[in-house]
Each structure stands twice: as structure tokens, then as C-alpha cells.
Amino acid sequence: MLAYRQGDAGAFEALYARHKGPLYRFVLRAVKERALAEELYQEIWMRVIEARGRYAVRAKFTTWLYTIAHHRLADHWRKRGLKLVEALEADDPPAPRGFEPEARAEGRQGLQRLAAALAALPEAQRETFLLHEEAGMTLGEVAAATGVTEEAAKSRLRYALAKLREALGDD
Amino acid sequence: MTEPDRDDKVTRAYRALGGEEPPRALDEAILAASRRPQNRWRVPLSIAAVLVLAVGITLRMLPQRPDAESVALAPQVIEASKPAAEPAAPAAKFAQDVPSPAASIAEAPSAAARSDAGARAKPAGRSPQLARAPAALQSATQAEASAPVAATAVAGSVQRDAAEEGRARALAAAPPPPSAAAAAKLPEATLAPEAWLKRIAELRKAGREREAQESLAEFRKRYPDYKIPEALLR
Image (cartoon, rainbow over all chains, first blue to last red; front, side, top):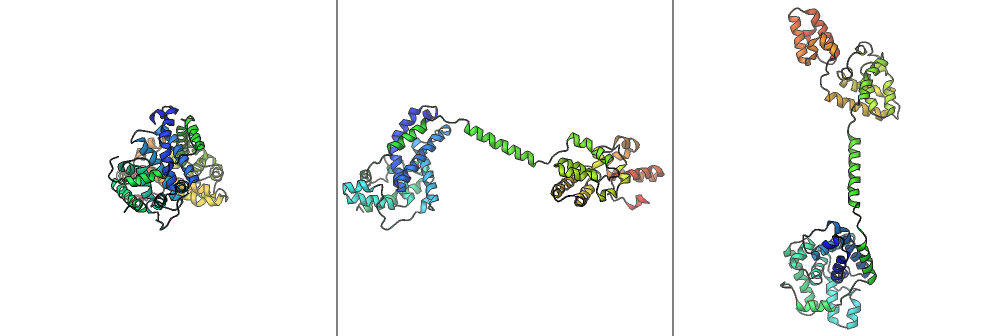
């Protein structure tokens, strides 16, 4: 990112190539709507581009990137009248559209249940799981990106894993 | 990854959900945006604009100081408006500080001002401050009271502002410095009111009655609202 700040466009392309898949899936599985996910995903990268002049190395780029993503998602939930920490669980949520094609094609009930369970997680738990699983962040990094204590992040992740495990039939 | 909170089965199942990627068009749009040069002047220009705005507003909110021209005009206003009263002068002065409607109003001698004409307009040799300050509090009040007499509906609020400003100035005004002539004639004129009265009492005590009377007369001109002890008036 520092190289990009100095005007090296190739540096940004390398960063983008490394992070585009995980970030895209993180956003897609957080909001569960492809069109909305694409819009948010583009906005997050635009914020990265706009912030290049102010970028300073205070944490890993991954943490910085997902902090921006977290804030953008928080704005999104706020506009929708939801708070990240208190999203409700549905008893029997429908499978999210983003997951359907793959799950159906493979015909694997376990994956469908996992997808449904992931979609049904409270926002904060799902975000924590995705940051941990998709972005490969440690609990400390997850805590930094989401603005909570490491204990809170750990607790959220444990709850999320327990529910996903249960969905897979592995209690 | 050495985190204890990891479940391999969940991880494997999650990976099997698929690895969606952003559409190519989206990639291209983002990469194209990343190649656009950053507008380095946007932030400095924004800051400069905010500063200019803030300074402008601050300057507008500051009370306007009398400038050299308006101070120089004050005695002329007294002269020109004879038999206009001295209290009208501050109103005229303050009116010069505000937009034109008030100036024309202040130049027109009000009925209240005329009634107090004679003696106070006399000392034309006084400094502008001398002309303005001694009765500033009173004149400001009078200006406020007499303003509606001459005021039009449009100018009313402007004149009220001038009167309020006059009152504020009067409250802040120090005892007025005497003119050079008055100071030469009456050395006690340079004293504070209390000390001046004490000096008058001393003159009386020393039998210098005529000097005491002159000094007292000058004192009353300078401080018309000052309550003079009965003992000195006898």
C-alpha cells in the first residue's frame, strides 16, 4: 500500500488480486444479496483508493482493509435499522441466494444446512466467523477490525462455530 | 493458524460452499479507479475554504471599531446639529457604524435631543471622546428612547442595534480624559471624580470659593449624572 501511495499502480493491482476473493465473499455472505454485495464491495475498494494519501502503517493491510469493510457494513445495517450486535436469528431461514447454485449443483444437504446456518447467524457472529475463516485473521486482528475486545471476538466465534457445527450434524 | 477456536470440519464445509469471485467488470472498474491520479489539492482546498469562511464569519461578528474618519466626524456632527444635544452625538456616531438608514435617522435631531440643546453643545473644543463619553450611558439610553420618534419601521431594528452597542460602549467607557484647555485651567479635571470632589472640598475649606464654584461647574458638565454630596452643593 505504501508503494501504491508513492504512485506505483502495479502495487495496488497486486494487493487487489490477493484480497479480492476473500473480501468479495466476506461481503456477499454478510449481506446475502449479490447486487448489494457488489455495490458495497466496490465502495470499500474506493475508500481504500481514496485513503491512499493518508495511509500509514499501523497494522496489517488486511486488518485495515477489513476495518473499512466493517464500517461500511455497519453503515449498511444502520440504514436498514439493524445493529450489528443484535441481529435476530430466524428459526428456519431460507438458503441465501448467493449459496444456492453451488449447493444445489453438488446436491449436498450438509452444505445447504451450513449455508443456511451461516446466513442465520447474528450479524456480529457471522462477521467474526467470516473474518476469521475467509480473511484468515487472528482473533486479535478480528477484534481490532471490529472494534471489540479479543474476548468478545472469541466469544462470538465460539457461538458461531457451535451453531455451524450443529448444522453439519456434528454436536 | 494456531487459533484454538477453529473447527476443521466447519472450515472444510465452508470452503466447499464455493469460491465466488467478483465479476470481471467490477474488477476493471476498481482497477481503473486506482490508476486515476489523486487530486492532491482537494483536501488543502477544502481546508482553505473552511478557514476563509470561518474568518469571514468571525470578522462579521466582531463589534465594529470606530475608524479614524468617524471619530473625526463626531465633533462636526455636534457642531452641525446645533442646537442638537450632546446625547445625540453618540447616536450619530453609532449610526455611522451601521448601514446608512440609521445614519440619516441619527442626523435628524430628535425632539428629545432638541430639548437639551444649549449648554452641552457649547464645548466644541472638546475632544471627540470628551464629547461622547461622559454621558455615554445616558445618551445611549436616550438614543434608544428617542429612536422611535424619528425612526421608520425599516430602520427601527438597525437603530436598536446602535443603541445597544452604545450602551455596551458606555459600560466599558473609562472616565473621559479632559481636553488640554480644561486640564490647563483646572488641574483637578485630570483627577478621578472622587478625587476631584475632594479637591473642590479642599478649595472651599481654604476659602477659595470662586475656584471651587468653577471647578464644581466643570465637574457637573463632565459628570452630569454623578451624585454630588450635599455638603459640596451648599
